[in-house]
Image (cartoon, rainbow, N blue to C red; front, side):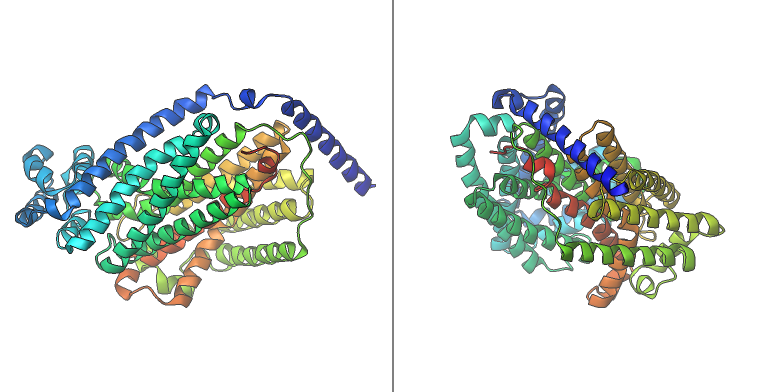
Length: 531
């Protein structure tokens, strides 16, 4: 009897989706691609911000050229850094700072104060290193900067739906320049990383690894975008092309984060704040990329024929089921048997003792609350996976997932607030739990919103993100296990929390990246005539 009811519900939902698609397909492409004023109100100032950053990066690239280097100005860096360490007002160092630092460094110091902008454990170290590079290395870095600014400008045009649809020839011509610039910029970045090494990279090992991942994934995504264009799969072409644009966004978003958090925490150094920014930047850029893709997708008409749902491969179901089982067991052990990271040898080998001590304080004297979180997280993982691979129409599973995911997300937000601001001792502070909790609860609420509106295609897309973020606390521990097994982090950087930052960053990046990639071929994407 239950199976008959489920079949009736599935047929009813399929009939409703067919009716919606047939109605929407009657609209002309011009009607479907009409600009939405609310989106433009967000897009236009965002584009203005990117254009302004492009001017700043072009200024930095021009100053970096060998013909503009003045060895006599090297001593000014020490002078301004010393003034920043004692918190001197910007007006006292303005003249020397404008000669020794790029414009964007000066603007940061104006907004946050000289201690954050020019003081030790900040951006003065890489600026000082840049002044000692060979002419070839300076030229390559300058090329990388100039092309970065150019790609941001080109991306504004390429990913504005109205321009992309109305000016096909211009879109293709700009695309050719974009692709050539993308490869050149990425390989220039790799050249710089090889010759700079870990020691001379800003903040050392963690940021060096992140930059390599960014450069390599950009080359891979651009290559895939070309392959899918030749195969006429425009949805995947657009998705991977937007990923490259997202990769270029990392630089302006990172600097914007420095300014924002520098203003919030003026007593901290830029290096301390960067422990938090390293976790945030990829997450922010991927979500921006998702929004840009969704905007371009929504401007395309709906197909007349309904989406044909292919059964998921058995191997995929088995793999996801095993991952859910392992995550459930890990969650129970983490929050019921050995609460927190401190009880695990992998975490003790990778994370600083001060970070583990701060993490342990979250659970001290709260055994029932901690155990309850472990159980709630297990409920979110199991109910979410059940919906994704077994029966997405189960009302009880949906209700259980919403309740457990929102509760687990809110608890993580509380822990993030309790851990507080970043520091060299606590590394990222409450950054991981804040981002993880916000993402889990936020995407669960978004999925509920789409369910109430009867949009099952977007419901599933939001659920992919939400279910993935249910794994984030477990991925944090697994990340420590991975870095311990790789045994590649120098002891100097382990003691400074780089292993924890990389593990936390991966625990946030993995769910976001998985959701972003799945979005390119989701039911909503396949339901659109993307061209």
